[in-house]
Image 1 (cartoon, one colour):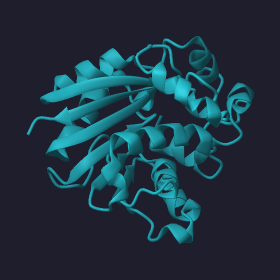
Image 2 (tube, rainbow, N blue to C red):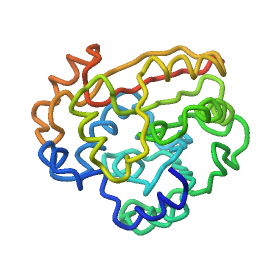
Image 3 (cartoon, helix red, strand yellow):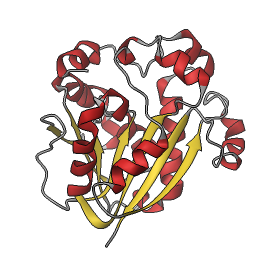
Image 4 (spheres, rainbow, N blue to C red):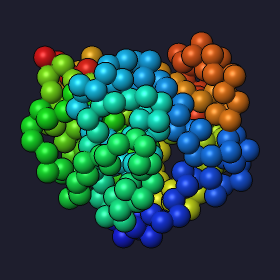
Length: 237
């Protein structure tokens, strides 16, 4: 999608809950985002200590950063996006009780205005399926450029191996031009640009609206059929 297309969706963006099938799985977009946020907090307990510099690449309306903060994260958050409309939504949706709005910056395509090795953690959530295949390597290079040696990248994406995911994506307006990608493509793409230690978990086997079933998700993290996956990449020091 072009920045203009994202701008068109910015004011009404609700995480794809305009799709009735997705609404059956959870009452709000935050329930879906919280699955990823809780995974990150288990993986990175230092997020609650306030010392980590975190970039959310392609942050959209800032929902992942906001949900992380609502769950206790106190990191130094920065967000970037190609859509000025989406970036304008971050401040509108950021509760005053969470403190200052994250630092925000516009992207020029894959490129960001940040310095080399500026961040300890980079997250990129449900972004790559919007990026044309021939432009994805530029994104991987940029993620690695802004990451500290020893830093971590977390790539969250929809899992095309899950048939319900493919059904929902095909019927969600903001995903009309999406091209889903397998976790293997993410791993190879990252390794083509830098040296990383890689791990993959699968998420959202259970409906996010049924939080009491979350332990089942953790036991099935190895099974490549969850609705989402996360590729965790630690950059060589």
